[in-house]
Image (tube, rainbow, N blue to C red; front, side, top):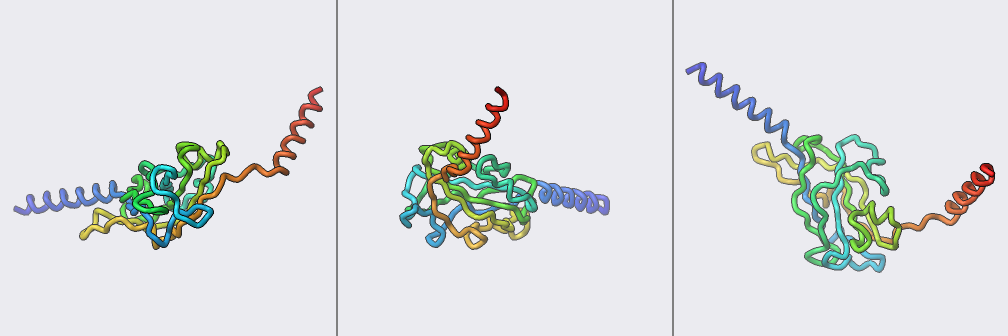
Length: 194
């Protein structure tokens, strides 16, 4: 009987260790009426697929540069969602981090929106600079839910944990001064070659 108790105890501990190893942190990817995605006019972004919203993730301690506008190294979690059920609102359900963040652990998150007619992601629209509107939240450090504890801790909402909503605006044009300097530098290089 003692052998059986020891075996069961070892199996239970092994199972608990395995579950905690593979548990991941979870957040609720949705907003409410106080955290709308707005147009420049102040109205909520229109219902439907005109605007797409994505959630980016990086492990705790990752530098902000991982959320760069042009080439982020942060990971898109799940598929983007459209605006629904009312203007300015989105609901993407619970999203789970990769195993690089344990259940209940803190991770870095950012919400981004873009005008879908101009590209397939925020970065795509930002790089093309073809006139589409984009917007993003601040980078949020959120302690996620932990599905492995008893009772299970459900996904942590992003609302109330740093997400305040934002306004989508046209992609910034390259500055005239920057373009002028680039042109002057190119002319100098060409002149040296001759």
